[in-house]
Image 1 (tube, rainbow, N blue to C red):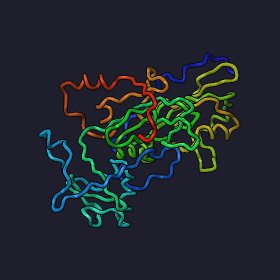
Image 2 (image 1 turned 120 degrees about the vertical axis):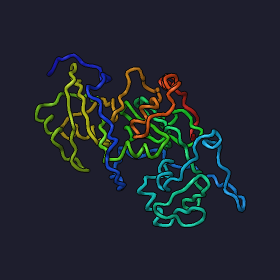
Image 3 (image 1 turned 30 degrees about the vertical axis):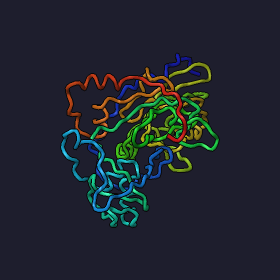
Image 4 (image 1 turned 180 degrees about the vertical axis):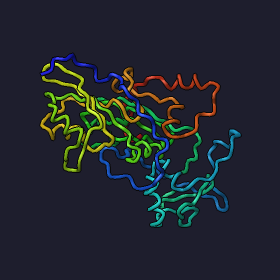
Length: 339
């Protein structure tokens, strides 16, 4: 039994994953991933009366501010950015005739602009052509919260702790179990959500794991090389001993997928029980030690652009002040359900 001193599970990782901004652009359907599915990616539909012979009024945006006009964009890209579905799913809906543009069946590759009317399953979709950088926030999830908007058992949900959005909805980047704590990312942009969850990018997840007992060399090697679970082979990219006291022993593990309860099931498969599990990193984003449980904070705009593969923000003047404001920590009082 090791007597090494227990280390803090929140110690910063020794290596930061570089964002894969050049990953292939294939649009295949994401593989089933019960651990990392989009939560809250739905659109509220509000039918707006149309005036005969006129396009619906455009919201005040780039035109009103004297900026460049919004260029038409591919239908599937616009709808995916709104969180309606993945681009692949939307293409399938187009083929199935479920999407209309100006009351005509949509076509694959069709481009739309602010003056177009798009319906999905007969309901008007409130289009958004927002040129602003999407928001990406970090939330330190405590034990005892679910990553779902509704729960039949009435348990607390992470969405009750997030800031309210004027438009759109927060989309969870993956999920954490009810009894798992740590880093959760949320965005208001469906394309960014898919980018961060799609298996082709193989973004690493890093966890601090406390076990009841200590791994043998043979057990550790089997977890690195691959172990058979009921839903396929699973393996850790890395497994590092972090020491411990008594029967509790800490480890750091990384893996590039997010199947349901995968980390817990892997240790159970070699006969050990996880007594505490905390996610400390998702891709290039590490959980800051200053972000305490139940608190959230925005990522700086420049960092969001880098992660999303977008050009750096054009506004240089005042950008430092803006990033300072976004670096603030927040603890939101749970707000009423249904937001």
